[in-house]
Length: 338
View 1 (cartoon, rainbow, N blue to C red):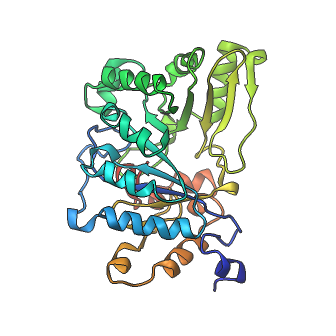
View 2 (view 1 turned 90 degrees about the vertical axis):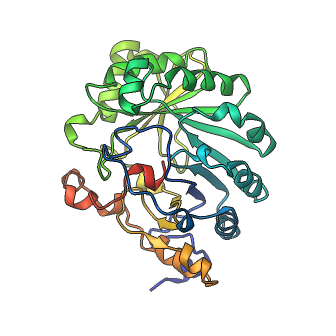
């Protein structure tokens, strides 16, 4: 039964966490094939008529904003492959919420003017290596130079840029120092993300590079006297640091080894209109069907948010997280939305 607090705010869960951050996946399609995101044999794409259209995306987003969401991030798949991306951005810009984007960077040069026109200034670019051969291996596409050039273009145009780097042991963990060195002369944030288990990505703990491993590597190379701990935000997902004297900074998203669920304020909407209250959760709530049936979706939103577990979809120990039965029924990262 939903308590009095929940009745007043449908975006408050039973732990009294208020959710003001909506992540909307615009598509399940992507122009890369990253191994940790897309299973080797691909994914079964949702039929187009079962995906949210522009009006539905706007209607659902408006309901969330009316109930307190003030930040919306557009994800995918690769959100920029949607032919109506600019129209979606234009419509969402009319809402009272800050807009941001997560992209692989390949197509951003085509949308610079739209980003500026519709007040999208914060962009996260997924980039897991600074070596072209590794990029081609992990993405199964030869697009490193294009991505790197577009990151430079975004910086030149004054966008707030974060690089999302998924670390995988014995693949790119030797590049931690190289990524941090990018922040010496560039006003960017590099965020190292622990490799997380999703359907089809062959996760196992031997591939995990933990927060402890990352900091050990950083201190060994730069020195403990150069490492500065920055203040964590109220709803942080990244524990942030800076090398003294560097222009930019770096952070660690330790979803596996040191979760940050206490202040979680995020709710996810998949491209086919399913609500997920946690990235790790197998459970989903179909709100698109109700919207199409002209039914109110607020009760579904309230129920989904309220039943959110305290920690990582109740996988509150590493033993549980390491049990494939608990996470193998989740979607691939591609179809959840990054």
